[in-house]
Image (cartoon, rainbow, N blue to C red; front, side, top):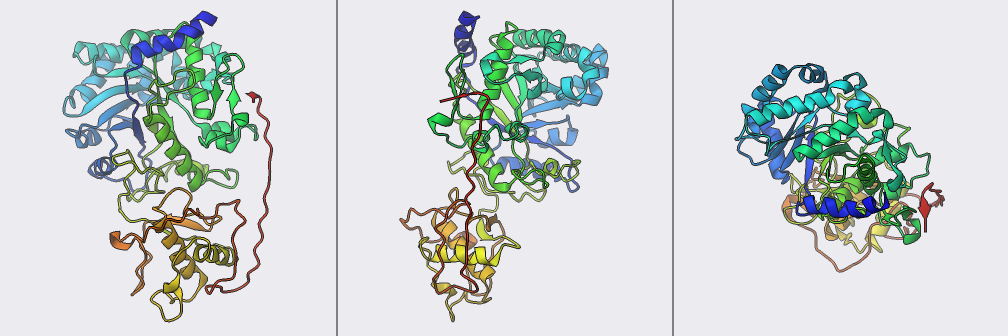
Length: 498
């Protein structure tokens, strides 16, 4: 087995080493005001998104995607799986109606047969491999099998004992399905579709998994998880899960099937039991995930090997059932407004474009006035913002209240720092908005494309654990009392840490 584990990276690299990873997006439709297919495609093009996954094979959406060059993964819904898996004619009709009718104008590159069938619809598991084979046979009959791959997305929960990755294995009760399934993927040159959600691993770990480890945040060497069998260092949950899947396949003697992550993301809002479902964490996770993938970083087991990934998801789906987080995985609201602006700046990068081309940093609704005052003092002091427009008699003096004045100062700082990561936080009392806060003769920096003056200052907006907020400035309103409590928590990992 040790020899096999040593050879595995070479086998995978030989077959898939030249592929470049991509970022795609899932398009769910459980919205009360779902945009039209034309609007969806316009947003995709504006955001440089060239890979999408649909949860069905909606005809109107496929027509809208025609002649765009966008690569499309369509899906066989779970409720159709039993019929297709038991009838060659049903499978052939499905392919004729949903694939042949649309190619080559619509660039369909993959078919996802079902979704998390083993865990979500186990009674259909006996026909899953049959369904894949019958769909593939229909593609072969139309000479489309070389350009359209067939697979099925799995929940990562089918992997047991996922850390250390080298000891991971698929749930053995599914061997009668997984073994022929993996052999089918191998023989057809397809890939394992895997849904990877570090958010859930973090939430279910009872504080064993650190938040930074789940969010791809940099860890000091002594905090990195180390696989004691391979001595590979893991700096994030995502890589550990993907490598666990690779090792699980190797234990079934499958060594050259690549992995495509069909779903991954982080919710931007949750109920009281989900305190880490926040805009900041969602932004951090998805921004870091995108950079990790498009840099062709690979995983510790397979460095440089593409792990293409589809973000879950394009829109917030307000019709999804509880909990609240289920409705808030999207990058955009139904009207195309970004839920947050991803921390991506490279020209042409997927999702790097603000669709409005105007974003502002404003005071949060309901923020504590004392917190706002302290943050305002910091911005106009150590933050080096020119707050002279807020003085009495100047254009932005009115309305004379801490919310209005702090919004001006927060935004001026945000703009002068180039809208970079961490510059619209101010201990949690600021948030990014696409609504221009300018009013009357008070024109905010960044308004109508006019950027604030860039300074050479290196200060960052105070974060949630910064205690540097001061008070004495000409923009003081009420009390200057401000306290900060720093909670230091230790975590224990079941993995080996250096």
